[in-house]
Length: 184
Image (cartoon, rainbow, N blue to C red; front, side):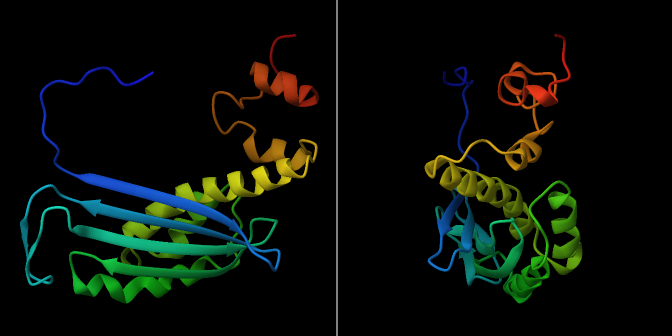
């Protein structure tokens, strides 16, 4: 079902976030994310030669996490291809602080600390949420493709993460009845 029809308006900003999950030949996983911001109009910018043109990327940032099957970050690569300030490009290496972290409960807070607030990049940090979801979906879909049963690990990864996976929901009752805590 589409959104309701909006009132009269004009486009002011576009943000596109794209994530891909890849299984590597060595058994590890590459999870890549990219964020691109554009404006539908031309605007002044000192560091980019005076102007950023309509449709030209204001931000174009990418990050790749290499993870193992336990969702532990083994390696990181990050690039800032376009930003409003040349100074922004100096911090792409801060993402290497994610090495050793695990995509698990607490990931959001730990990854924000690792990215360093004023030492890091807001946009690369923002990508880590969709990347974490992509990592879980990538590995879960590969496991499902091998016809593995839903495991305790998959249950723990999703329990109480949203309305559908609340411990009193009919979904938990159906798939993990031993953990259901709703009405009988």
